[in-house]
Amino acid sequence: MSWQAYVDDHLMCEIEGNHLSAAAIIGHDGMEVKVRKVKPEEITAIMNDFNEPGSLAPTGLYLGGTKYMVIQGEAGAVIRGKKGPGGVTVKKTTMSLIIGVYDEPMTPGQCNMIVERLGDYLLEQGTIDTILVIKVCGKDLGSCNPGCALML
Image 1 (cartoon, rainbow, N blue to C red):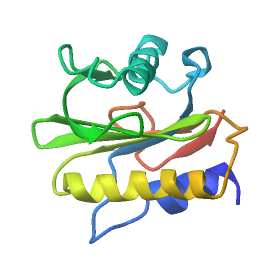
Image 2 (tube, rainbow, N blue to C red):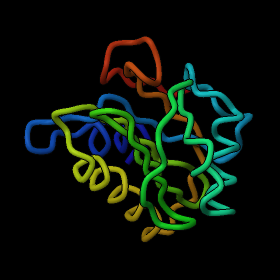
Image 3 (spheres, one colour):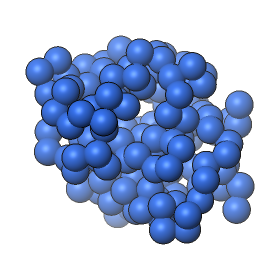
């Protein structure tokens, strides 16, 4: 299965009539980030929180310049953030970060399920994520039409 199919079939899938507003699979290396509005320093801060759980709590999680309040996650594996009626889930795999951004009517639990299931599947398969950057346009991660996916 191509990485594009993972994005299209698993991250941007419909769940109870809802979709993520934006999603991406991004390499751990902040220099690899090519998704519009996502800054390498934001990825560096996320990676630091995976290595030192709780380091984002005082300052918040920034993604695409948007600040999310860090809420419960799984130390070293999952970071979750909330902003108003929406939020973000970030799951760490061997070589990448699986990111899902949601707005109402999608619920936090639905976003968590989509992002974490894909991340868990990739970890269970022993997949080494050799293609590090996939771009999925959405209002928080780019300026293309939502659901438009481009391999970089």
